[in-house]
Length: 218
Image (cartoon, rainbow, N blue to C red; front, side, top):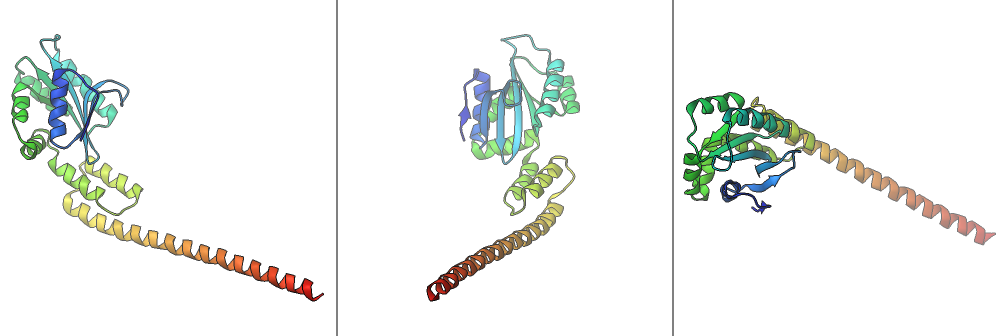
């Protein structure tokens, strides 16, 4: 996995953590119409990360949480993460973040992540950001042989939390059978059309030969 562009030390640190865990990472990206410190992706799953260092600026944590909760929804991110560095985070802000659907991390969490190897790092990120089961469901869809429309419908239902593993597995099997039958029908239609074209060309050639023979006989 590769990181795109460079950023501040904290942004680079977060980017390196996600990159080490197997994510594709962009730093200081304006992909969503506003600048995002870090965007991390894996298996059609997007994490939006905003970092703030107290020594560089004053931090109004509540406003920051509300701002990035809104931006995360605008971007359609699966997880929105706000990282605060340089000051202890009061419990009330963790409560506020949870209400807004934002994951709030501080120095303690980031320092812990930095010390882990790749496998343990991915597992810890799964726990911290609660996405392990979600990504496994998404990967089931990514590995299946279904139509693009069915793919998008399954991904949307997974993200909305309205389908579990057992139900998803059954529906994927049915969708694959349906898609396979549809593709087979398309293949048969193409073969029939090709045969019709070949037949038409053969008739045309025979007609020209017969016509030429008639001219010669005259």
